[in-house]
Length: 179
Image: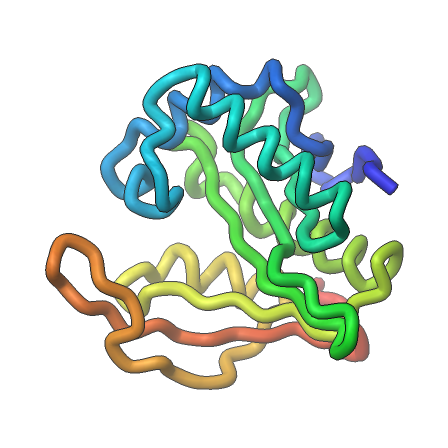
């Protein structure tokens, strides 16, 4: 079911909509965001296709993406569980925020709400995520959202010819709810 979820702090998680394309273009215009998308999101058409891909994931059950929005429906970021494996009840979590929303707890609140929902409605048991070790802000989000460190993948990612280690985190449905 495609719900609107209360994430606390005046934030709401809701499914992506076509009207969000402009916010996606603006968010992914930043160099550090552009390389995360895996594709250029430099036009309303490209961002519209990006949104439609997230809608298609909902329909297939392979992923669930939410826009994290303020009380007045301003897009502040996104959270998603993808690579859903029904056999093992697992999924991969990713998150991002707009430049203006960074450092305000938006990603943490979004990840907490996403995990709570994923353990309930779709019935997942284990959620995993990874971040570059040179991204301490992403590590804080994962930790504050209740994801425990599980290991290191050496030189897993390559951006602009530079390789990066990735720290892995996971949260289980049976883990304590973060405070």
